[in-house]
Image (tube, rainbow, N blue to C red; front, side, top):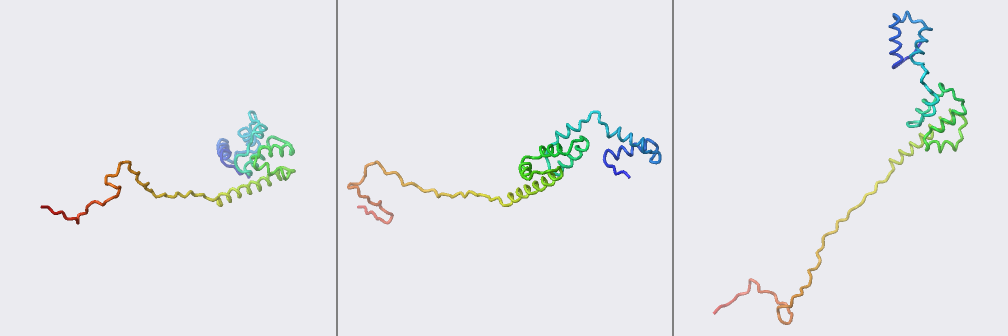
Length: 173
């Protein structure tokens, strides 16, 4: 039984139709055609791809990609551990090195836990962040006293008299 999807499934259907149906598919020719279509290593450099692999998403994705390339690149386990550690983000690697992982699987599992803790800390920080507000105090406009007059006083003695009011009556002769 085969479980194919995507381009492999499309190729499989094409191959079966090209030989006249599934009843005409024989294992050895099928396997050779499959290797020819998907297993070409003429231009592939698995070691290059393996070394260029970088941790950009989550640790689980890095580990899955790493394991897929590890199987093709045929790297010994001790080297694989060092390369995996070198591909981790610095924030995870810094904490992981404190635990001195001895195997690739141990390093991957610890990295996933460290990543989860870092993410929980980030979320907690987002929820507990305090907001500072600046209050603006409105200062009422005050009038400064009018400037003192430099003109001489009109009335003698400098006493001030109030002007006549409308209730004052004048008599004429």
